[in-house]
Image (cartoon, rainbow, N blue to C red):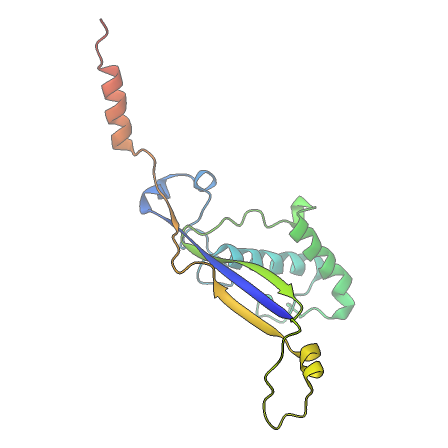
Length: 185
């Protein structure tokens, strides 16, 4: 198989001026606004990971081995006997089927880098393969068992986007004063 992975970075930033805007309106959180229990820095992925861990802990009384957890005697690692429970919880979180088992409160961070990816796979062509000396493999064996992966960025340069105030308080007062002070004849 030959696989191509195209990576496209997406950078989002926000100016300090939008801190005054309520979180639900600006739709992002600054690093120090939402204190996570298990992570020092806020990111949407960290929030979702912590939320999922807490929901699995509450529902199944255990934590998956790769999830953050409380370091106490009460917090146990999930075993296969709990598989039906934690798989059900994770499915509900992912598909937001149950609002009590949801991590929708996890907003993106105001400064964040995400990587979108596109993957395409195809069968290797029937071209000839250059054989490495002293390897006892035939061309058909290599064709059947070889995998090639190409990983690259879609563009040489990329840009981000910045959230900022469209109109500040001073501009608003200026515009309002100008409109109210206009003479009508």
